[in-house]
Amino acid sequence: MSGILAGKRILVTGVLTESSIAFQAAKVAQNEGAEVILTGFGRLSLVERIAKRLPKPAPVIELDVSNQEHLDGLADKVREHLGEGVALDGIVHSIAFGPQGAFTFLDATWEDVSTAVQVSAYSYKSLAMALLPLMREGGSIVGLTFDAQIAWPKYDWMGVAKAALEGTNRYLARDFGPKGIRCNLVSAGPIKSMAAKSIPGFEELADVWNHRAPIGWDLADPEPAGRGVVGLLSDFFPRTTGEIVHVDGGVHMMGA
Image (tube, rainbow, N blue to C red; front, side, top):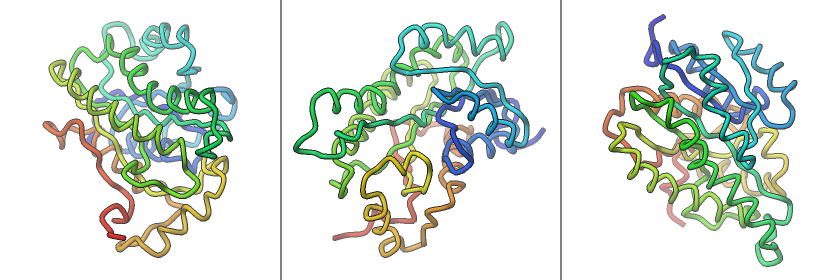
């Protein structure tokens, strides 16, 4: 099969529904020639059902990134699907979570904040380290962020967690560069996904895009962000690392 990911093997986390950026990234990756493996957490039967809606069915591995046993066994489980001695070429980190308390900045407890930071930021490093043994030939790691330069309404400690993710990406790029592995993030605009429903005041946050995106932004269309992820997974950015690519309709560049 031809395509910009022809022959590549990619692990994609965070697929839950067809409205997720991760699903679109997996779909575009398959259409561009990649072999895709998914991970899921909690609702595995749902992920397995959604996986069948991809152009080609993809295997699903259970992964809780806050569970060290899951991380320790991840490479072996991926190897079962790749085959012995076959390298992994790319990873998509589409994992974020904050307890409800994390969305109230002044009242959030450390327990709320530490959970948001561990799952949304530290897991980027944890996932990369867990799969490093399979990335012997180099490759690309791509995560998803939400522009942490701004103190967004209602986003609160999740915004801080995304800032931590963006910092983690830079340091990971520094340490993985000598191994031939690029680490980049896609900063996507808001998408009406299942995850968005858990953010209090999401509609108020998303309304910014209705007025500010110079090239327009469709809250119901995760494909542009998915395409951005696949672009960074490909070999078309061979010396780009530690970068944040905005796929947000241009809102990030607009002044006050």
